[in-house]
Length: 67
Image 1 (tube, rainbow, N blue to C red):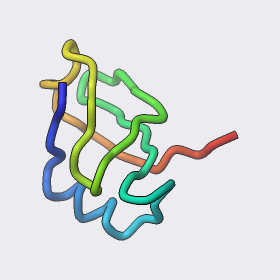
Image 2 (tube, one colour):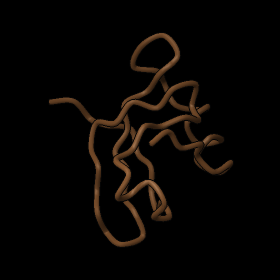
Image 3 (cartoon, rainbow, N blue to C red):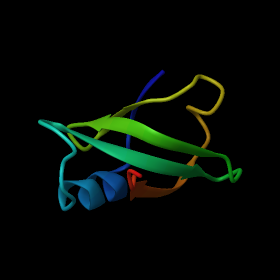
């Protein structure tokens, strides 16, 4: 499911480096403590998430550290 991030996450990501042209790779921690790693975020605001967690509030977004 395609999800638009909240303004606070967009503001954070706009200040972070891109992984490639127009996207970043992030790790997302949800309110229920599930974590999805290495997820692409497009234009610092659109993320594609599995349907079962797409409606769970996001608690934290951080840049994915490769390696």
